[in-house]
Length: 112
Length: 113
Image (cartoon, rainbow over all chains, first blue to last red; front, top):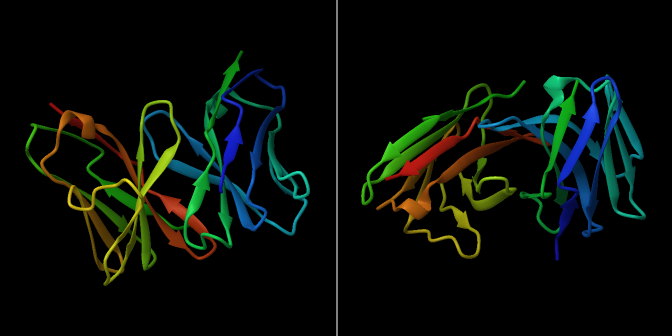
């Protein structure tokens, strides 16, 4: 079946890097996404990676994909207090061509 | 980029009444939209997939007579919570597929009293 797991909580100091991890079980992933959710708001797409890529960088964000281990990570460089939010990874698979399977979400707290 | 507008942002209703939530794609056509429910401090639970011009596909355990979905045009899908009860209080979020990705609405906080 499909299962996407994330650690629940991450706390970092402002200016440090944050690394949020995600593991999934369905090897037929086509796209993997990272979304950010601020309190009381919808989800904002941060970045995505196609399953045949290993890495993608977009400004402060770096996505690493280890397809063999079914492990996805999001690194946020120079983390700011405005980065405090819940981060969800999500996968789109061949098994469910329309649906996104969401991870459990990681709450990132940035302290000064 | 693609924008999905969801209204209302929050609504309080009495038990037994019905509430309609709208989800509009503003600058693109969305043949497929999705409705999610999110409980506090939890992930998103897909309720149903809404397809323009046809019946919605509901996930297992979601009552289709309770959560009515209509997708009558390429830019609008609506979710109606019928005969709402306090246990229906939740955060409801819609999304639309735009090419390779998915754009989300800002969510609707429903409180049933």
